[in-house]
Length: 124
Image 1 (tube, rainbow, N blue to C red):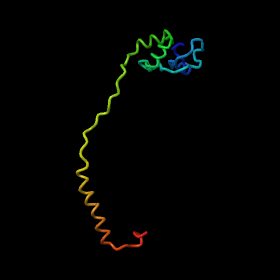
Image 2 (cartoon, helix red, strand yellow):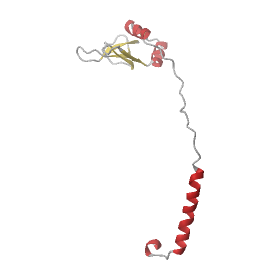
Image 3 (cartoon, helix red, strand yellow):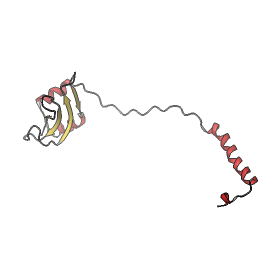
Image 4 (spheres, helix red, strand yellow):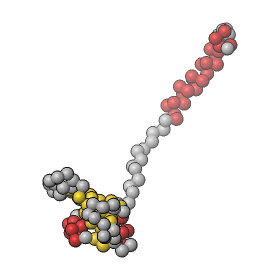
């Protein structure tokens, strides 16, 4: 197994995928997994790698090509950030302001229903 570049860009517009592939397959042959992308045409060149998957495959015996090795050493290593819990805003008490109008509204229909004569629409 090998971790190397596979070209996917149009003619004279190179764009590469960083792939895990069997060593004897063609450059753009069927890959096992895509573990990143490399675009040398942007300024500066962009490199997006799935470091965890690369570490997994190298741990299972995959060799890194010379070019991918150079790209990985030049790319900044971002530490795996622990998930940051969302900051909870202080919750204001909603029960107190709503309790008074709800109590008034609950009492009003009962008083109206007792005073209003029964019509055919409410009986049905």
